[in-house]
Length: 473
Ligand SMILES: Nc1nc2c(ncn2[C@@H]2O[C@H](COP(=O)(O)OP(=O)(O)OP(=O)(O)O)[C@@H](O)[C@H]2O)c(=O)[nH]1
Ligand SMILES: [Mg+2]
Image (cartoon, rainbow, N blue to C red; front, top):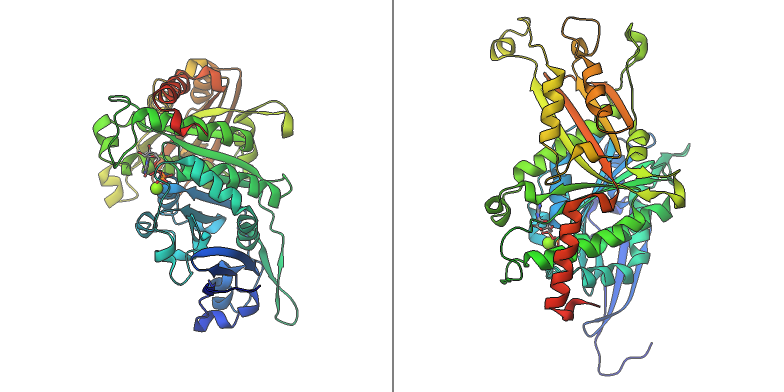
């Protein structure tokens, strides 16, 4: 390449730190070549960057297996994944990754380390969090414009593919101490995003598609999508926040694309917060609620499964495939239709305060009907009618003495009839926990056209289009 009167610069993302040099041959590097400030070339080298520390600490031992994959896209998505990994046992079964366009949001994360960050930015594209100068490259955000975020991710699709390959490959030890990479078996992934903004809406479909491509369609991916709060005056905009109708337009844009890629969608509605809370960005309680529900569904069915042989009664068991099945319609594969679910979780402590201080003192009985009723009231979608659900799944998670064989046993027939009075296709599971609480987590699945809340968002989106043709691309 010949350049006259131009500055040719090459920048490599590799940090070449003391620890990483040992693994240099496996270090992920992205080489950016600029002419003046325009990127003319980008390439990704080599896999498995984020496993270095683990392999270093364990002396290259063992296969590294993380069967589940949790991705946060944008601010809302990353915050919820951060909350999920505050539950320590999630680290045993899942790999987190977060993608965001705003460094400030990434820096607020408490449980997802920089190794698992990716910046998305116009110009550099996709930037690993460990890159020198990350802060300077990932500043922009997409100004609540999902079309721009979508374009940047489409332009960087090859780098996204390389990133997923690196993050998801499994490292195995060979006889001579060398590590090699092997395709990891990732059966399920969960991708979280907020639908009112730019980044999450724009990049989530690409991430799901890339996971699907990497696993040749074997991985089932559930999208957990946050609906924007659209209460309040429509069409007013200030510099900080997009108007409700603009957020609705973004939500429709995101859902239309995510629906094509995801195997199922779980909706979380910021309208369940008060307008004041949503406007002030007070999301912590809702994020914790969503995280606790997801942790119950995933870790309950994976880590703390029931061993039926230990119980005289035949306890119902569900696994993540059952959850995926309950989130879609049809026979699976290309033919199936993505379902939309509302989630609800109720909890009851099993110890009174005196029981905590003197653990052998009694315990509290749990009323299954109250548990079911409360989970019905706490659905994540505003104004959803669970009587109109097409499919339902419920998971009871409880200490073993509440599961079977004691006077404390929770009456699961009441939980089952709570589900069967709502729809024909139901699935109930029981799983264990070591905590002193009983939780009941439900998912009620609908077709898109069943949900009034989605119809409301679509009509607000149409209003926005009338107001401003500028965004229609
Ligand atoms: N439940 C919840 N909602 C959030 C949170 N953070 C932001 N939101 C809402 O989620 C929607 C999307 O906003 P963000 O996640 O900030 O957007 P983004 O994906 O980062 O996209 P940009 O517009 O590029 O910043 C908006 O309606 C926000 O009000 C959060 O932590 N939890
Ligand atoms: Mg953002």
